[in-house]
Image (tube, rainbow, N blue to C red; front, side, top):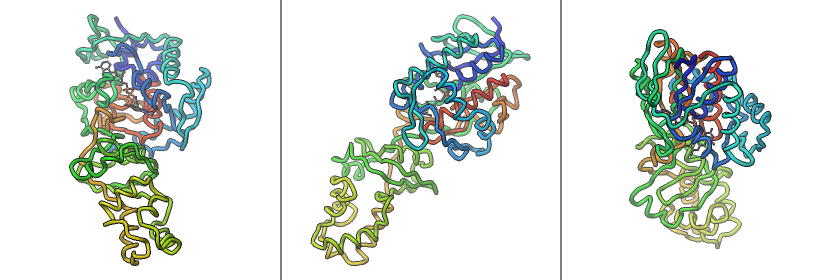
Amino acid sequence: MSFDVVVIGGGAAGLMCALTAGRRGRRVLVLEHAERVGKKILMSGGGRCNFTNLHTTPENFISGNRHFCKSALARFRPADFVAMVEAHGVAYHEKELGQLFCDVSSKLIVRMLVDECRDAGVEIRTGVAVGGVAATAPGFTVEAGVQTVHADSLVVATGGLSIPRMGATGFGFDLARRFGHEVLPLRAGLVPLTLSGAPLERNVDLPGVALPVEARANGRAFRNAMLFTHRGLSGPAILQISSYWQPGDALEVDLLPDRDAHAWLCERRAASPDAELRSVLAEALPRRLAQRLCEHDLGGSPRMRRLQPRDLARIAGVLSAWPVVASGTEGYRTAEVTLGGVDTDGLDSRTMMSRQVAGLFFIGEVVDVTGHLGGFNFQWAWACGHAAGLAA
Ligand code: FDA
């Protein structure tokens, strides 16, 4: 059987590419090895899919080439996806910081993409084990289960390595290497950090405690919530900074991001000289955390009147730059994304086509472009899927 376009991977990027190419009148086949398409969309955003971010800019992406994502993002904007969502009557809301979520369920986004594919004449095959891929000049052959199909254009949209139980594979990276592409080092991103030994033990009664912080590492800072877990630290601020942190790197957390800690401590000392430090800290921090900080980081909980100016400066320093010694991350088991991937140097940023192999395209998370938390990864999937769909 012969198709104009074969897309391997029926996730966010693959489905967007397929429906775009199908609308152009191309005969498109999507091959998905899982029993259904869009599984990551279904589990995203806590089941409500944070499908885009209204404030998307190229600065929201990590890549070896920070310019690469610009072309695709400029040609398919959040408003373009929102227009499709509205045309399908999918209700949504802005949660915070430009993040758009479905009101009801992520299922509606998958249904919308599948309906668009059907209307564009796209054939979707699920539960298909994709085997060998060969270049036939022109085009490619792809072993799809018991059949071999021929494609003029082949689009690789197999995603990253995160959440292996959802069907993630290294297929796209292996295929890229076989066709002469460089694959930049892969690692888990948007992932909780783990603590071990004493740092973990002393947080024993903190799991579940959350607070607003600013997490900082390697010159990047993210303000949002931090959550103590049984294994370490999570929450949006930690997930964001995890993409910029590697074991051994310094990481610090401002526990009072909205205050001048030193001025506040001086003011509290003057106002409540007989109060204990932990009670004062509990005015601004969760009580259990205030207690642990006094025990382990601040040298006790004296009455405020006993704190000398240098003590106040030291305590303020700890509160505004609390050092975290993380042992690692939870890895691909819980990571939302994979950093690294197919080197963008080998791809045309306008079409996502390989510079080495005409007709071969790489899109979505398999490419070395990774978004921040907040709907940016889906926006990248839609935008680059659209770019490839116009060219494949
Ligand atoms: P995606 O993973 O969506 O699709 C790849 C497809 O290829 C899968 O269907 C897979 O089964 C298939 N496949 C793999 N190997 C194959 C093979 N050998 N043969 C055939 N098929 C194969 N992002 C965001 O913007 N907002 C959010 O709310 C969330 N939430 C979120 C939650 C969780 C728990 C995770 C893990 C991730 C998110 N993300 C997110 C990230 C987002 O899901 C991700 O960036 C996109 O799904 C990437 O789209 P792709 O199409 O590249 O891969």
